[in-house]
Amino acid sequence: MKLLFERSRPGRSSSLIPACDVPAVALPASALRAAAPRLPEISEIDLGRHYTELASQTHGVNKGFYPLGSCTMKYNPRVNEEMAALPGFTDIHPLQPAETAQGCLEVLYEAERLLCEITGMDGMTFQPAAGAHGEYTGLLLIRRYHQSRGDTARTKIIVPDSAHGTNPASATMAGFSVVSVPSNEKGGVDIEALKKAVGPDTAGLMLTNPNTVGLFDENILDITRIVHEAGGLCYYDGANLNAVMGQARPGDMGFDCVHLNLHKTFSTPHGGGGPGSGPAGCKAFLEPFLPAPRVRKTDEGFRFYDPAHTMGRVRSFYGNFLVVVRALTYILTLGREGIPEASAMAVLNANYLMKKLAGSYDMAYDTLCMHEFVMSLEKLKAETGVSAMDVAKSLLDYGIHPPTMYFPLIVHEALMVEPTETESPETLDSAADAFLAIFEKAKTDAAYLHGAPHRCPIGRPDEVKAARTPVLRYEFEGGRE
Ligand SMILES: *Cc1c(COP(=O)(O)O)cnc(C)c1O
Image 1: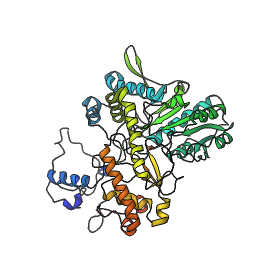
Image 2: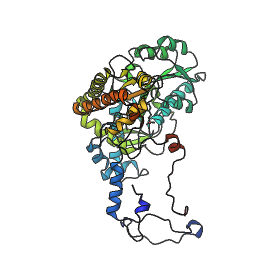
Image 3: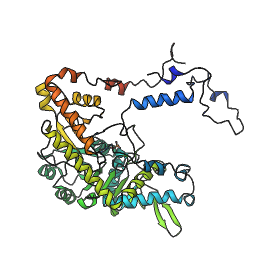
Image 4: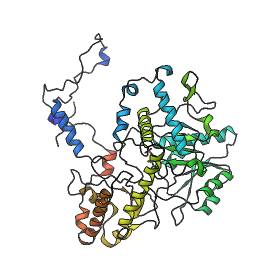
């Protein structure tokens, strides 16, 4: 398709910039550019068509099934957007005095209260801008706690080998060294290995439960007890709360701090890369270390305050506030009955689809799953040459976004499928048909699948090149301006 620069014709415009209504100011020559920028000149209708065409070539949850495991690409109800667009939330300034932004402070206060209820925590900060940032903040809480007790020997964070890649990265960023513990044959933490790993140098454990293979660790209470008895704290990676919200609480499993991904479980669109929100929550004994400022309710209304031993700020202002508005809207619309119903449906949908595929595809673990399941295509690849990548690419021809591929690393030729709660049985059935048709095709025409997708604008880009040397500027004929 043509780019905006190629559609541009001199003199056309959409008049989007209002007339200047303040006195013109003369800028010094050093602040002026020598030549006018070569911006595309384009009429409103052509502009609209350009973006509509782009959107039609992009997959999104509004276009089709999006079972991207671990990412929770759930449907985001429109009412969230309506609330987040209210002028009272959008026309405010972060430097406004608290007395003039009481509604916004109330949103932060209420969202904190409800998310603490859902996670079994006592306090929460909304500053972290995404999940990994929330992990970092939670780990700083652990660090501050040990330091406050003068215990400087605790320098290690234990992370299971099935962990999301951000876990060891965040632990390292927060100044810890990482100790990896292996998984057992059931996909959970190997208890004997954990017992050997803990000691006086253990600062804490980071765990996802259900973990990244979609399984709930049945030894969770033993795991948190073993870490606590060794003097460490337990950190819960709650990026994907979709299987457990309203069903089980990290706080009751023995965890001391958690982060959530509001942009996953609590319904903010995030396929394009943001904005996110990764609130970090903790039990009362860690609250004094939380980032400043926090919101509290006083007789005069909602006010900011700094916790006694605050770590300071981890981000400017109050985080991605409108993501919190969406999360609060989502929680209040679902309510006390709707939240557990959503997680139950997420688990039901994952098990339904897993069962439909299990006759053909090999499941990595032969057991009930939680909100997602992992298949291993190792055998299919050995027998037909068709890889997880080929299957993922073929799904695009059926209008299905590929599942997460080659993750978690402990499963070979992995495809990780997370249908989410809002998909109908009809959608799951047709997705199953697509998966099964591809499986049959692998036996008869592997070459066709190696060439997939056959119906997309772009098939198999060089992903490394696209990431390392992206072309982000339009090249005018005759070189750059
Ligand atoms: C997505 C995810 C993260 C990281 O969240 P970001 O917002 O991408 O930084 C961490 N842990 C788990 C289990 C996740 O699924």
